[in-house]
Length: 79
Image 1 (cartoon, rainbow, N blue to C red):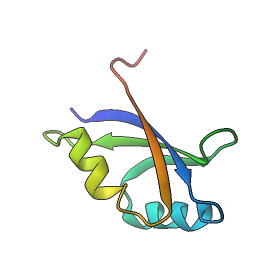
Image 2 (tube, one colour):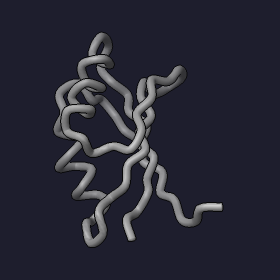
Image 3 (tube, rainbow, N blue to C red):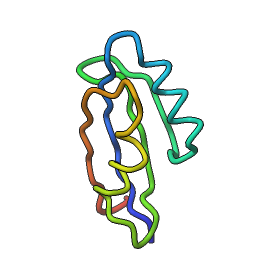
Image 4 (cartoon, helix red, strand yellow):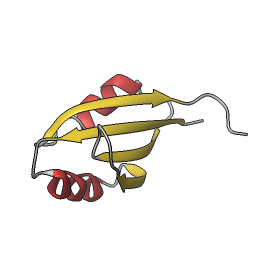
């Protein structure tokens, strides 16, 4: 079973749309939203079974130019 995580992404000023476009092109997310507040984007992502969460995020997301910071929230149970 895959692991669902939510990732908040802070982008360098002026790069939010470019970062969102790059994420969309990679087709790794379930949902992607622009948000207000401390972070610019909120992404729902399913980590493939058997993959390490940290490695998956580092290798597939955090290498995108323009991402300044991220905050990952792990999920445990769906109600």
